[in-house]
Structures are given as C-alpha cells and as structure tokens.
Length: 342
Ligand SMILES: [Zn+2]
Image (tube, rainbow, N blue to C red):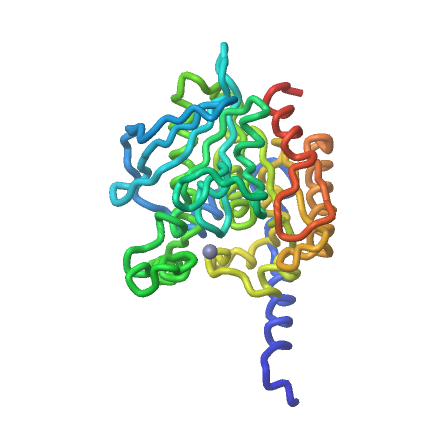
C-alpha cells in the first residue's frame, strides 16, 4: 500500500505486456511477413495520391553539388517540399540516400541552411548538416520536409503561437482518435519519396538507402521494414529498448504507436530490416536514448543478424557525445553499402 503515484503500476504493466510478446521475428518466414503486415496496420493506412508529378521550385549551384528544391505529394490533401542534392559530374546513375531530419526546423537544418533559407555558416548543430556530408561522398541525397516541422507546422498552431516548435501534438492526438498515427503518415510520404527517387534518371533505383536521426530514425526504420527497395539503413540517436527510452523518459507524442509494445520490443521491430544492411549509431551520453538501452538493442540486433547468417551486415558505433549525429563511421558505411554489393 502507499504507492499513490502509479509508478509501480506502469512498471508492472510493461512487465506484463513484455511477457505477452508473441512474435519473435527472428526467423525469415511467416512470422516476419506477419510482423510487417501488423506494423502497417498499427501505424495506419492513408489515402494515396497516384500522381508522381514533381514540381521543380529552385536550382542552386553549391560548388561540389547542385541543390534542387522540389515539390511532391503522397496524399490528395497535402504536398511537401524536399531538397535534392546531386553530386556534379555524374556519368552513370548514382546511389541515393533519403535523409530524414528529427525535431527541429525541417529539411533546411540538414542541408546547411538557416530557417529563412540563407546559408548556415555557424558550427553545425545536432543534425550536423548531414545531407551535405552524404552528397560529398557521391550519394544523391534527398531531404524531405517532414510534416509538423518548419513550413509544415499547422496554420492553426502558428496562429496561436508563431514560434511554436512543431505541430506533433495537434497532428498526433487527432490522428490517434481516428485510428491513425503521425508516424504512419510520415512513412506514407517517405514511401512516395522512394517512388519519385526511383524514377529520377540520375538515380540507380537498385541502390537506395535511408538515414534518419532521432524522430527521423523512427520514420527511417519503419520505412525500411515496410519497403524492400531500401537497401541500407542508418539509424542515429534512436535505437533502444522501449523500457529504457520511450516508456521511461518523456518523448514527443509522435513516438507512440498504439499497441506496438504488445507484440515485440523495439529491437525486434527494427530487426525486421534484416537481412538488409543496418548501421546503428548512438551518443554514449544521449539523455533520451540512454546507453544501457542502446547496448541491449545492439546485442539483440546482433543476434537477429546472426540468425540470418548475415552478421557482417549489422554494424554500430557508440561515440562520445549526446543526442546528436556523429557520422564518423556511418557516412562511409552507407556509401560503401550502396556502392559495393557484398
Ligand atoms: Zn514529434
């Protein structure tokens, strides 16, 4: 008696929930395809825009690469912009990476721009201008604006507070009531990005990868699980166990997919990417995706890749740092995985 706060209740609920995990996702076969189908149902299904029409908004010569801004649409009700960074002097179709930003001011944060579109000449922040790092390794890099951030914050949120950080709360809470998730819509849009990339003459459609940071890594892993066209995946500042991160530390509501923890823990869901290549990166001092949970997740992912006899396709880097991108091994890893097929 005497536990008024409910902390014990939450802990016990998680223990009881974890005890019910019914799908191991370990072996290739029925359970894994069931896992993918289940995941699609859990994140929700959204109406599609069948048109692959792409509008060119601007083209800028950035010295070593060309930066285009395009507009595309995955749903009949909304469109979105993306930066496409294309290395100069390509002679053959090149590998491409979808770079998905986390919470912040949108795609400009990862292509070296300030929120107003001017060049960001300051020391890069936690996103490390990572799309520029990728294009400078010869990878065509597309950085879509994720809904809820920057220019894609809701007008009603902006009317209340022009400085509102994001629209995750407004979008998530209402979608949840309608049986859908914000993560699901974000994935829906990234799947359209894969379609559009595959049609670009500069892109080798057999060599498309994805790299996401934090909330962008959530979208990256969900997309990689659901779409076999993704040949290599980098997840930064995200991989963990539910108990050590999402269920233990305050996170944005956009991380919560109703019922997902009933079936498996986060490493098993991420493990549905196997046997395709996966690189996990984490800062040892990341306060919201703690080291202990990353290490547990890495151990479980190593086991999953071992069970698929492709242990060499899983790699990781734990670096001295916080909730941020390092890239010290990840950039070269994805460049190699998309350039040289094992
Ligand atoms: Zn969010």
